[in-house]
Length: 189
Image 1 (tube, rainbow, N blue to C red):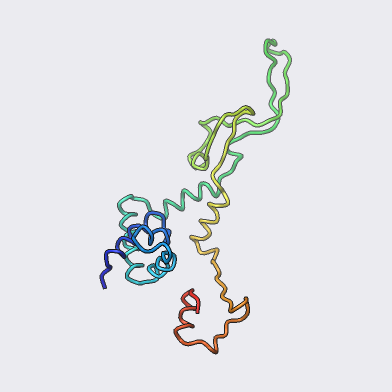
Image 2 (tube, rainbow, N blue to C red; image 1 turned 90 degrees about the vertical axis):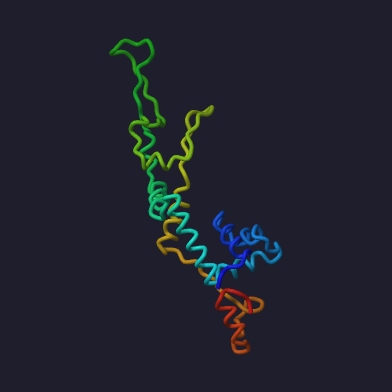
């Protein structure tokens, strides 16, 4: 069965941000029911297939693959701050002192030379700025990258628990086959 115009538009809009509710609204569905319709649309085999096909076409067109994205996330997730800064004691010669003259010991942090930063470490840097207190180095969210990698690898499964009225058990003995199917599909009875 071919998709109708609204369903085709939903597929196009879903690719924008992978948000089914917003895609449904932008495709022309009512904002009141967009959440439900977006969820239902993604469960329809012909729409799910159209989304997969559109994602594959976009990946081919942009030459961006899942492997590339995972590699970039890995650069962030496995980054090491020790490759960017050095800390500890530094001996500095006092200005105006002779070659073998007085030195001062300073404790603190210093950025490594840009020539010493490898490409993977550089990819993990979100920001370098200079303020009143000196240089500030901010890395991308390491934990977020690791969670994204873990989800992609199937390490974290979202678990949905269903309960009956007031949090009690679901009275399945009293339900019709249609109600049970709705619960199994993630809906309410």
